[in-house]
Image (cartoon, rainbow, N blue to C red):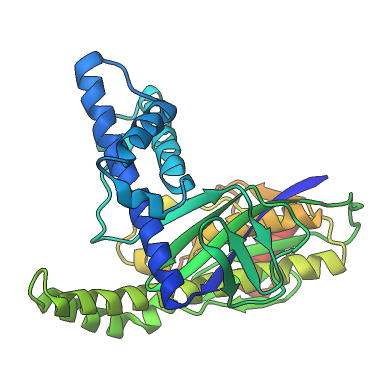
Length: 373
């Protein structure tokens, strides 16, 4: 069985390589904006939309006279940017046919270098090494994490992106995965929450780092510093970089906690050969509408947890079952099945009146999810 997996690792660039990456990102952004302007112009004149191939031929003809600086970059950067523009329009038209109108359709927009440096994608001759990666026109770039990328894999394309001053490369590989026999152990229920990131029916619990809450004071201070600087000044640009670094740090802390929790759950379930992993289908969009809990819910990353647990369980060969959001996992007693209709969100301990069981609310919900699976 072939499994597609993505790898993302940080690059260790010198000044020359960093400058070359900035040129490629700028070339990709310029091609996107140029192609978007040409598409709109041709559509207004003829009523038809030119394809990425037509735009790439026209752009190549203009390189010698109007844009000679594009020869300093790989031809893949503008070519892939125009292909992404085609995909963006196809998705916008698909959403329009589904009944979404207005700004919710998500029409392609022009990209500004003031908001982000962006990314670019390269194809062609790409080779992986234990401590570096070789890309077209960029040469051999060092990696900050060694022995992470599989050196014997064949790579079709690589995407180089920038975030708060750090450069990353991501590749997508297809790896062979053998068939794994289904386990006969008990199913593991996973209850997601705010105070604890995840509580499992086997008794394990994973803490929520609350990355945004712990850095909220510094985030407010840096936001005020950025807002008080004069527009288009160098001090405002420095404040923007400091603010972006803090946002990136918060995202990395949250993502690291999610990866550690999901990996630990799947690894333990694999070693014990659990019959299945059971997760509740939470209405995350509806939970974010609660003005009292929206910030705490967003700080957990519930959707990202589900995304990671889905592909990791699939790779490990463990079935994942999703229970309906209407299933009363928190209100039902895991011992006798009695349902407490008066249970409130503030009640963190479940007390069963018929059988007298006293259990933590999250652990009781995890046991009910495991029983339903």
